[in-house]
Image (cartoon, rainbow, N blue to C red):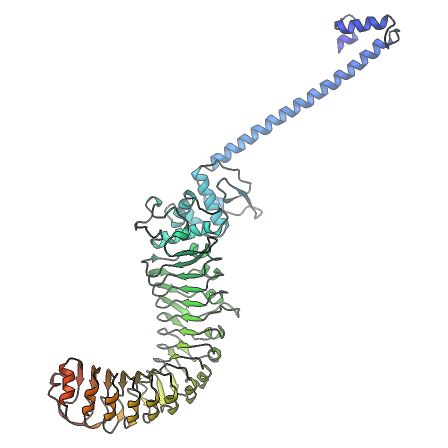
Length: 594
């Protein structure tokens, strides 16, 4: 630019020619010299514009270089940070503002790191995939105790490693993916054999080879829906040991409909996570060694219809969470545990219940009135507890009842006559209580009755109703130690299907009815310890199925046992025959006398 202002600095040849041309009076400059000055100013402005553009371009280049270098540095730092599984305490702690930043990693899992957006890791990195897997497990709430991932020997950590190394046939966002983790954790905790049907190893994950690299839907005991979601886990009597991990329930809470782990050796408590099983309709954990309280949340599961926790070590009361809504339970089986408290919570469960079995616990108190509103009940077993009060006439409302067991409790009072309204009843078990009064005559009109056991209620009195002979389906009649008196009615012989007939320990008088020889199905006849007299009727020899006959303790029985009855002994059909040897002559029961 300076050379153009200084005439002593010759411009380029082109510019010199132009100047000479204008000075000579040619061209647009008028030939008067002003044109040259104007041209110099125009050239000067053009050069300024070129210089400004150059400076702007230089600034852009410098800025680009700086940004590129910073980005490479960040990527290198992030890559180095993912070369080992980070400390989980810091990795999954909430950020200062309570937010977690989430991104998508190369293996498709959602990952999150507090405080910053995590960079994408390099494809194929085992460590980064494992970190992403663990992050997803935590983020979805499948494992809530993050400390388990600090222990490389924990089942959760090993299951996460296995999951990160074995791709699924489903998309990473599919429920099947984290259900694989939950069931793998369950496999490791219980040391089970959840492989495919041809799986033979029983080792605990030797190099993770004990878990097949297949879809979980192919594993033993697992059933899936058409869309690949786990709906059924059935591993009854599979040799399972150990506890039930939280992950089993949290990973299947939205899809599992049936869980049957009965007849194993499972221990520990039942996780509260089971209370989130929104689709579960069948839960069978009977015959294990589970303990502590039954989670109240179980009774609020929206789909649960069958619950069986029998023969475990559960204790404490049967409790519900609130005033409802409650599970639509049709069957509750809790027998042979250590449950305490009363049955009021059960009474809240509505009228859909068909089966209730709490036999052999330590339940107490009286029967709640709400129990008698369960008109769909067909099976009610409350035996072997410490229940008190009377047997309410309200039982007459349960007209669909087929099985009623109140034995081995502390019930008092009489047997209500309303019980005759139970026309469908097949079994009535009232033994080992403190009942009194007489047997209702109406029992003889319960035509479906097959088993009537009222023994060991010593305060009862009265005679044996003739109407019992109407019970054509009756095969078990046990009235031992009930304070009964009077004769044995011959009409009993009309109950032609009787197999067990026990009247021992009463105050019965008279002779043994000959008509009893018509009970051709009879296997047990217990008439001992009464006040019976006369001879033993020969007609008893017609009882070809008889294996047990007790006549001892009746001082008035005399005479000789017939050869026909002895033939039953000699043919080894009648293997248990006792009588009083002082009063009765018996050539075949010498070794069986008392």
